[in-house]
Image 1 (tube, one colour):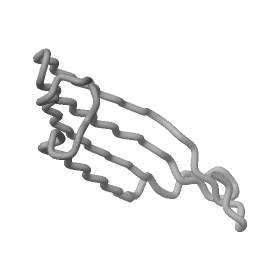
Image 2 (cartoon, rainbow, N blue to C red):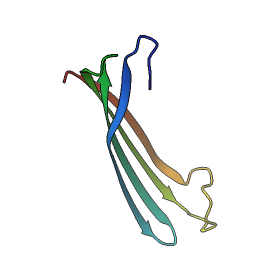
Image 3 (cartoon, one colour):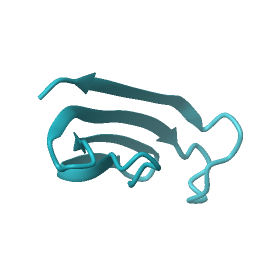
Image 4 (cartoon, one colour):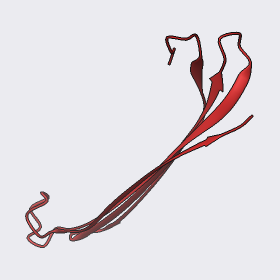
Length: 89
């Protein structure tokens, strides 16, 4: 991302962790965790800060009628958390 005053942000390390547990025919539990590291630069290229984006998502789906589609009441847990942390170099 390039900002109008010349500062810019570059992507760094990106970690994605996926865990899915299937207990067929009825239960599915999915956990997704993502962490992206970014570096903030001044217009001259000097590192002036860091940015970390962290996201967690969990869903529990119980296919009670075994039709393979989420119907009302079959998603019993859905949790989404997002965090943003800024730091100095």
